[in-house]
Image 1 (cartoon, one colour):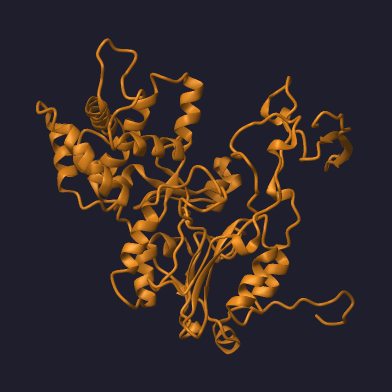
Image 2: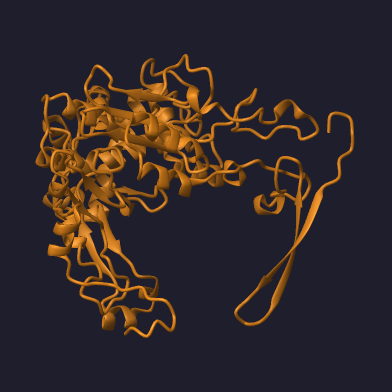
Length: 459
């Protein structure tokens, strides 16, 4: 390292299994962190990694201090030890102050963290972490609200690199659009915001797609129906909407047709599985519609962007006919965009049937680009595997007026009446009360748990 040999730290770990066996693993570390070569199927080059999760961090202390914070300064000070689990944390108090603080360990380094660099130089090493005082934050902004939805939270002149690929800001744009619609919002207003299905992505892309599709006129009857649906669509990804299904397929088909002639089957699968790459590719091509990715190298013609969209639209209609049938009335978004809660033991069908381990499939509205984010893997399109893990709305004027819901239930035991007992609420965009003060909690309580020391004599 920098012209001098350094010894690796070598540590043996003994892993004991339930069968009584002992597995001995030899772990090797550089000054940066562990060698991870074998996990990347790399047997020729030693790869080491420095990961923020291995740095000193104390989230428990932060939570303890947050629960005792009296003001904005207490709130910020509490988050100084919240390092490994990067979060944007929002603040509000009974005096009407609001804020947002990025709590994260952001490495200071001379180069992007997205690449593999030579390990024989400290040139590429971290130079510490961005000081907490210089992490992004907002306090009482003039707009009157703070908001976050996995979006980029800093301007282009921010002096440190937090990341390279960011989520396209469609969800945060829609959230802010709704927040700006009125000066004050009720709990009911926020319920509507959390469960909104309008797609800013569709709002941007549909005019582009329609402009390309105008280059052709000899559509068949199925294609004419699909085209009319897109022309009349209000960009709502409702489960009963046909245009929502057409758009989602068309968007992904366009991304695939832009790159599939340039990549091997293995690389194509990896590329398409990374939604951020696909979205940024389309976004960067749109302004000029000129790119080396556009032309299909497998044909003698030179295709332009319009040609790719036309081809993708034709393939979209054919796929809908295959997956949803020849009756366009069945091309609803919810017919292909579904959610099933599967218990790990449900792979044994007999157990699943007898004990009713799973629920669904449910037809769902929304998508990964709507405020209500029912998402899916691009390698298993439209089978929902991700969404809001919980929804909360807190009323600071009356804490007992707060509401919440989770997609499952408070019990993981299938025989319990509280197993998946919130699922229908969650799917229907409904909530249950989330009382705050002790008297109201006790009034609404159904059970009481006692934690007693061993040999206390109490039963």
